[in-house]
Length: 181
Image (cartoon, rainbow, N blue to C red):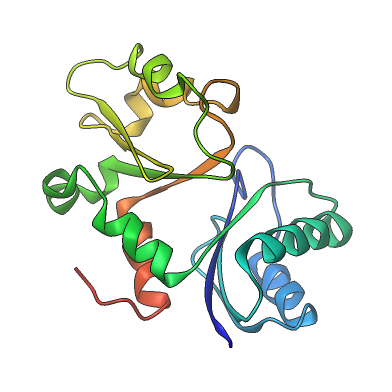
């Protein structure tokens, strides 16, 4: 059965890691993935595929390295998983008022033991982080650019993941046909 898959690339088009979105769509088509669409130039790809998420992650990562010379992590989520990520948001009230100040970090292989507490130690003011269902939710009331905590949320402390602000989370939900919230 073919279903939507949300593919998130870690660090794509940030920090010097670049792959043109048209190239990503062409790569997906060459891999036999259906209806590839990108959201902005920020490492978000939506496709239709019958592959299991873990198999698709491995295939996408291998093809990104082969085609673009990029060894980057990909995280693949189903619409059901994405819907749960949205429903589990512990900062729903904050997200509704200021969606750009909430970051959902999707983790590749889970959150490292002690990672949440390690990052919390750097929180300033009303900043908060909560882990729910393998996703880290960061609330940055003064903006992510001002956050010392955000700078410390590195793989060595929390594990490998990639973050999207709440606006992007909701746009990706729309792209896979989830009801708007």
